[in-house]
Amino acid sequence: MTDSAPLDVDLALLGGGGAASLLLAALDRHGVRDQRIAIVDPVRRRGQDRTWAFWGHPDTDLDPLLSASWQQVEVATAARRRVLDLTPLRYAMLRSGPVYDRAADAERRLHATRIVAPADTVRDDGTRVLVRTGDGRTVRAGWVLDSRPRPPARAGRTTWLQHFRGWWLEADRPVFDPTRAVLMDFRTPQPPRGVSFGYVLPVSDRYALVEYTEFSPDLLTDAGYDAALTGYRDLLGLDPAGLRVREVENGVIPMTDAPFPARPTPRVVRLGTAGGATRPSTGFTFSAMYRQADQVARALAAGRAPVPAPAYPRRHRWMDAVALRALDRGGVGGPEFFDRLFDRNPAERVLRFLDGGTTPAEEVAIMNSTRLVPMIAATAGDAAERVRDRLRPTRPAPAIPPAVVGTAPGAPRPT
Image 1 (cartoon, helix red, strand yellow):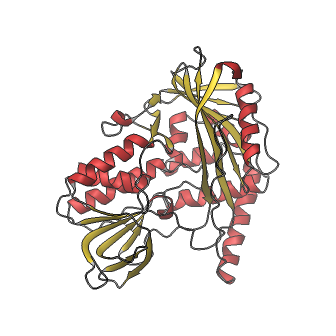
Image 2 (tube, helix red, strand yellow):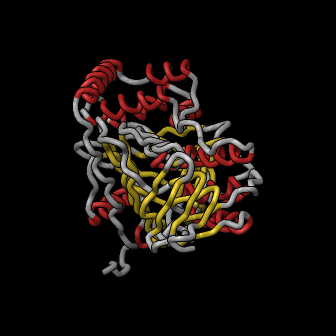
Image 3 (tube, helix red, strand yellow):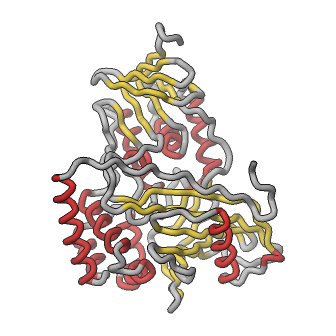
């Protein structure tokens, strides 16, 4: 493959993370065997570099890959701790290693060509897409499925970040309840502008992911995350003398009402966060990312264009914009907002809403759970901002900052 002889394929996958891995597995699962496929990514993904948590019905496809799942979860505030029964749903944890392994197997069965290089330029002429890679090679594709991180098309009216650090803790004795996850624990100190909470995902009675998360405009420092996690560990009553930090996870996810165009040109389709899979009000991404992969694979198996449905209904994106504005402007407090949702609705309804799966009638019940006056004010403010957006020049979106990377306490810091 040279400049004069590009690699001709039907599909070019740009990026090789979670969205691309789920897509490869879906293509294999749905028997898509008539497509020439190229994967363009500078890294071969392996091992446990991230953890996804999601809710849904038990699933014969994903269940063999799960590290753990729970029928019950806790939501805690300073006033009370509530145990929620998620039936008929369940909360599940999936680590990246099994996802990458399954994708590698699918890649071999699909006879895909892998190019270990970044995609430098992508040019769509409406008939084919020309991709130039960082090592000078060229791929000519019928369709490009792009899951690389991309900024939104313009700045949002409200832009927060979901940023977090988690410790995989191994204990000398049983200290965790493996039958129950802690979904949101708002007893953590709350930031001046934003929301913080801890959560606990136990794999066994001696091993769990304990994480500190903030929804806020700005990241913490490395020391700030460690201090917050130490405080949360102590709040849980865990004795540090009997614990070891086996792994550390760090992350940043955008929470914004800014638009992420899912189809920027006729034959380029974006997946994952770049394709709108991240829910603006929570930062959850996995379920929508999985749906996108399944819809693309089903379309190709049926001979249709590989274009998934929008990740969330338009009315949900509007509700997210209003909720983000109310939280950002201080009209409602984060712990109170989420506590009222779970207090006044069945847990499975709230979770289906956060996945974009509720009916309009259920959404009216959800909205009635919130405090009326601040939400009306946020709705009016959002409407005014939308009018101003039409009248003023498009503002560029700020870059999504990289995660502040930390290491296990006591381990050498990277240099």
